[in-house]
Image 1: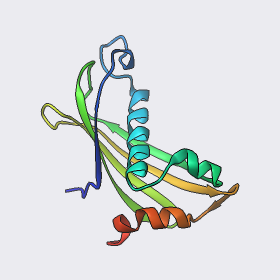
Image 2: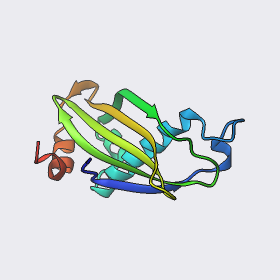
Image 3: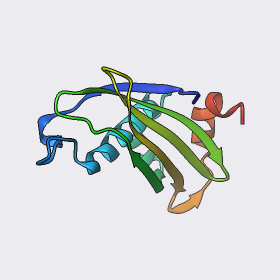
Length: 136
């Protein structure tokens, strides 16, 4: 079982659905990104403030497996846990339909930091995420 360290509950909005009446695949990336940003805020980070400090976390690779579609009005829970692999921070993110906890999307998001224009380790992230990376 995954060791989730953060979760966020959201609700599907009508305009996120396609002609089939299900969430368009591209919107799941928005859900995943919003979850990562809210997680960052929950540990004292601020995405805009990081940029002003010359620290830009960016997605290097994303892998998504779609399991069950969401429909307009569905509530869902987006959960994540985190690992560090070299200079990458790898977010393992799963989305579950709230009504029945059925898996909707399984994703792996590899992020890296660009610090002052250069790909680099990020001391600020090391500090913010130390509690979650200590079992590595």
